[in-house]
Every structure is written in structure tokens, then in C-alpha cells.
Length: 359
Image (cartoon, rainbow, N blue to C red; front, side):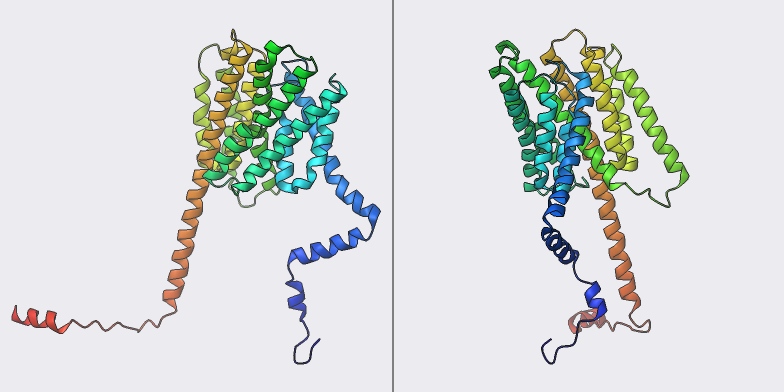
């Protein structure tokens, strides 16, 4: 320590930024090669396992060649992993995608090409979202719009195009089935982002049970989720055009619970709609595959857009209200520091007082 400078205090040492301790811990890990590789590989392995398990769940609704489905949850899992853990997690996505495609009957070459598309799609979506400053809280309108239009509808064009082309080039599908296959692929990957990504982000943000919540709020939330499920099954599964009946429940969820209510309700409604479309029942009966996928994409897209954007608007309004309250509190405290006997001497300008006397 140079002369004239005091020794650092314990309080200053405690106040060191977290990134300093993280850098020191990373340096210690790098000095131990085996532990370093294990620490780096564990998150990727976990993502690969989660990708595989959710893919098996999505394949329960397959429509084309036992591997193309209108509901592909792994895209949502992969995008959440990238948003939370960063770009370094992509090997886990690629590994999970390759194992899934290799075990459903695809050739090694086709599985490799499809895995490239399944990896590039969430990576592209992640880069697009990061470019526009996306926040995982989805508490701004721009976040909800970016997730729908950039993360889901735009980013998933990559996997649908590469995957369908790989099946075509390996003679897995005939040429006249390319566009129906592409539509199912794009719909499934986009639904994974629209449905699973906000749902998982809400779960990660709500790992701790909030304290001080009144009991009637818990009852209201339970009634909201239960009624959303019942109405979704009855309305979407009906032969009549009653799908619009689910929107009041999305509005209820967004107004009363913001993203915590809107994301799970959107998950429930989308899942019911996807299962109904896969079974070709309700409003999806008697139409071609391409028409069903277009209808499903339009319904789920408008539903997710309504719930997520409205929840973000309410969150912005509440945040603005809290900022106004804080500013009012600070202003009141500042005024309270003045002497109560302090007065302001208001003097009338001479010209005005002269005119008053004449009057």
C-alpha cells in the first residue's frame, strides 16, 4: 500500500462487485481442468436432457412422418436456456436435437441437417431479441411484441425451412408435401416459443412463493386457471365457432395478474387448441392440413399477442403509478424539511400597485 493511503476497510471489501468474485471463482476453476470442463458441460447436458424430454412430449401430436408436430416445446426450452444462460449453451441444444431426430427414424444425414436447423432457429431468435433489448420479465409492450414477431414467427422460419428441405432432399417426403410439412413445422416451432417461453420465464421469476398475498387472491387465481381450462375445452372443441369465448379469460388474467396470469392461461388455451387441431376435431374438422395449420397459427398468435401485450401494458401502467407515488413521497419529504415558519414575501410590482391605487 502506497504511503498516505489508508488500508481498505472490511466494509469496502464486502462492497466489491459480484462480477469480481465471479471472475476470481472462474480463475480458480480454470486452474483445475477437470472441474472446469465439468462445470461447463453440466448446463449443456441439462439443456440436452430437457430438450429430449419435451421433444418426446411434443411428438405425441405428430402429423407428418412421425416427427413433424404442430406443438414443439423444445424450441421454447432452448430459447429460455439461451436467454438465461447465454449463447454458450448451444451445444446442449444441438445434442438434444440430434438425439431426438436420430431416434425417430431419420437417417444420420437428415438428423444432422435437422439438428442444425433446430439449433440455429432459437439462436437466431435469441440474437434478434437481444438486438432489440428484450427483457425476460416481459413487462414492456416492446418485449411482448418482440417475442411474438421476432422470437416466434420470424426466428422459427429457419428451422422449418432447413428441416423440410432436409426431409425433401433425403426422399423422406415427396415434393408435393413440402409446403404442408413446412407449415406444420413452422407452426409447431412457433407455438413452442409463444406458449412455452413466457410460461417458463414466469416460473423462473416466481420460484419463491410471494408472501403477504391475500387468501382471496389465491382463490381468484385458482378459479381463473380452472375456468380457462373448462371454457377452452368446451369452446375450442365445439363444432360451432366459439373459440372467441376464451379471450375474456385472457383479459381477466392480464388485468388482474399481469404476466403471472396471462402466460399460464395462454399456455392452457394453446395446448387445448393444438390437441384439437391434431385430432382434427372442432373447427379444424374437414379441412386440409395446410388450412388447419394456418388457422391454428392465426388463433394462437392472436391469443398470445392479446394476453402478453395486455399484461405488459398493465405492468407498464403499474410501474408508472409506483414511480409517481415515489416521486410524490420524495417531494413531500423534501418540503417537510423546510422550516414551517418560513414564509414567502410576495411583493406586487410598482406599476401594478399604482394602477390598483388609481382604480
